[in-house]
Image (tube, rainbow, N blue to C red; front, side, top):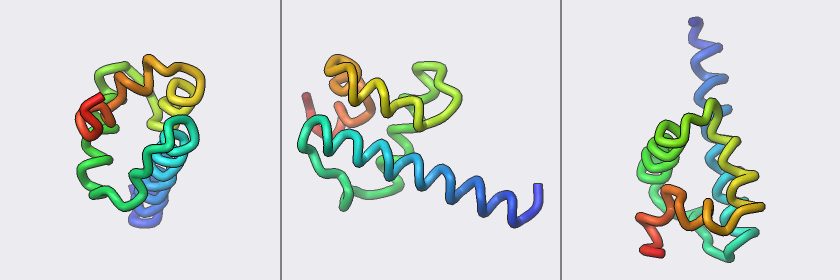
Amino acid sequence: MTNFEKKCKKMLKKTEIDLVIEAVNLSSGYDFSNYAEATLRRRLLDFQKDNNLKYLSEIIPLILHNEAALRKTAFKKCLYL
């Protein structure tokens, strides 16, 4: 993998995290935009792995269309829901 490809992959992951944060904000009103990026990334990646999701962005429909999933997400640890 070239440096350019690595950089693109990293940027894509950051974009997916930003989109998940926005989905949480839209569906619940919780704003994680200023939360520690490393913590969010780690918890989202744990959730992705635990739920056998190929992409982080697969979390978005769960959040927007399923309240139970929102409560089950990695944000549960942050919010104590």
